[in-house]
Every structure is written in C-alpha cells, then in structure tokens.
Length: 320
Image 1 (cartoon, one colour):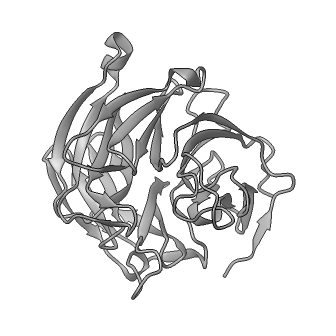
Image 2 (tube, one colour):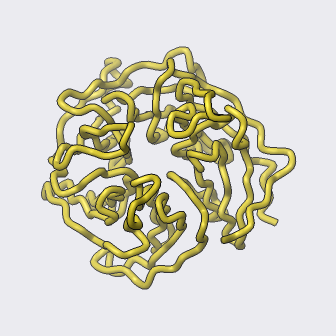
C-alpha cells in the first residue's frame, strides 16, 4: 500500500451549485465553452450547470424507462453520449440488460434552449457502464467500464455494436466485495488505458495496441488505493475522486499519492464521484468536481447533504 501525503494547505474550493438532498451526481462532461453537463445516479436526469452563472442551472433531459444515469463523454463537438439503466443505489446493482446509450446534441441548445436527444443503442451485454471514455473520435468508438462484470467494453456508435475489449483480474470484483463496484473510472492517455478498481483498491494501466484491438500487460500503479473516477492534468497527474473518503487525491506522474482537497470527516467534497478540468484557455487549472453528498458513506456516520458541483483551483499544486 502506498503512503498518502496531504497537501498543506489544501486547495481552495467553491460550490457552484448544490442540488436538494438526496441527490447522487455520478459523472460530468465539460463543454468547450466551459458549461458542465452532470448525470445523476439518483434520478434519470442530465443537468447543465454554467460556472459563469450557476443560477441558470437547467434540466437538459429526463429519460424514461430507466432510473439512473452513469457515464458521459463527448464524441463530436457538442455531441455527448450518456448511459442510463435501472439501478438500485442501496445494493449498487443494476437490472440485467437495462442500460442504453443516448446521444445529446447540445448545438441546438445554444440556438433554441433545447438539446436534441435520441437513443443510440442498447447496451444489453453490459451490467453497468460506469465510466465512459473516447477511444477514437474519427471512428466514433467509446470505451465503457462495466463495474458489475469487471470488464472493459468497446462501443462502436457507427455500427451500433458493443463487445468485450478486455477482461483481466485487475478489473474484476473480488469474492464477496464490500462494495460491488470493480473497474470504475477509465481514461486514455498517451496510448495507455488507465482505470480504477474500487472493490480491489487498484489504480492500473495497460498499453493500447492497434487502437484497442488488444492491450499490453497490466501495470498496477497503486495498490490499496480506493478511487472512483479521475482525470489528468497537463502534467499527466491523475486527480482521483475518493468517494467514500470525501477527498481528492493525486496520483502523481512522478510517483506517490497526495490528498489535495477534502477530509474524511468534512462535507467539503463529501462523496466525490468524478472530476474534469475546464477546457477554456487560461482556465485549464480549474477542476470541476461532482459529489453524492455522502450518500455512499455519511460523513461522521450521519451527515449527508445534496450532491453538488464545485470548482477547485489547482494552481498551488506542485508535483514535487
């Protein structure tokens, strides 16, 4: 197990918008204009939060025949794909074959105030598509982390197909897991696939071969490190949300772990589930974080709040 240091002082954060309790925000995607799309696990909804005016937070779409939304990823400019299905938050399990993938076209939102939403395909082979990541923009191929089956799926939007791309022990659940969430967050960086395995407390990577036709050997970067979703900064440091620990911890590209925001006994980033950096020039150091308000593990055993969207200024973070 890698020792975790703590940045002192912690990075400053500011709440942009907080939703009523109980609300579990699961994931987010940042538009090129800086606006944020957030998905909910506690409701089949996707909202838009505008950091320049959070009071204008609006419901983009409420989906039918599902109860929860999970991962979201941009494939073409302002065209996002989001997964949703039937999920029981109490048991953290999903109804088999219930997940689907939808396209959300935000280009129409800027012109008439409404996004264009349409179903892309059924994901009936996937137990729960938690994290989503873009593998190929030109071929419109998405990677999905199936946290129930412990596998990585490749989704071909153009052909409307999905198939297992990789399934290794480092992606699976252990026997009788305390939290039945195996491979969780997934990202591609410099020809490597990175992922967290929550139930096995792993942060791993494997080299991508021939655009995902195969993968290299698994490298365990950190063991005994419970992470949810994550994102990389410009220096290849991974900012990892530690949902049950109410913290953001950085897996440094130079090695080592350092907690940069939140504390286990505080509500600052209680139940942090995912994060993404701002895409606008000059604001790439601003980290957006979404939370579930401690629903997965109440702060100090009893404290729960509504899920929120907050921003953290990472300027003071040093790689050491």
